[in-house]
Image 1 (cartoon, rainbow, N blue to C red):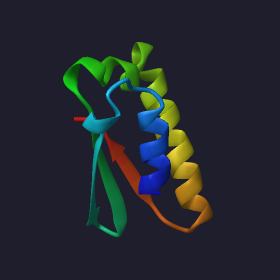
Image 2: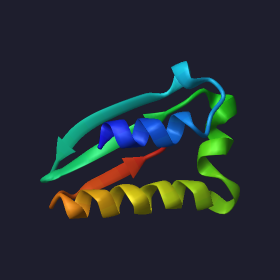
Image 3: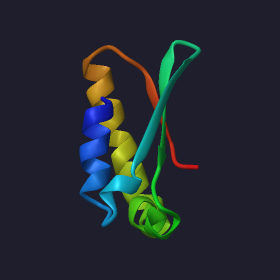
Image 4: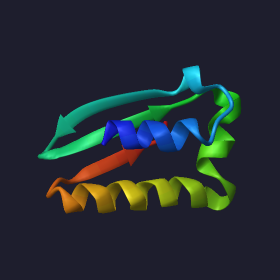
Amino acid sequence: MEEVLRIMIENLVDEKKSVFIKTREEDGKEIYTIRVAEEEMGKIIGRQGKIAKAIKVIAKALAAKEGKRIEIEFP
């Protein structure tokens, strides 16, 4: 799952080296915290959060296929 998220995020930003994904497990689900350079955050969030929502929907659909529960955070 982390690889899929990394591919999606890296294709949205200019500074690919600034992409940082941290994974932790809590209450039976995987939580992914995604960070990029501050000036790139707008590209990840999108207007009214549409891109962030789309990333979450895609990731949750892939996780459900594998029988997992996940959550995506953009601090």
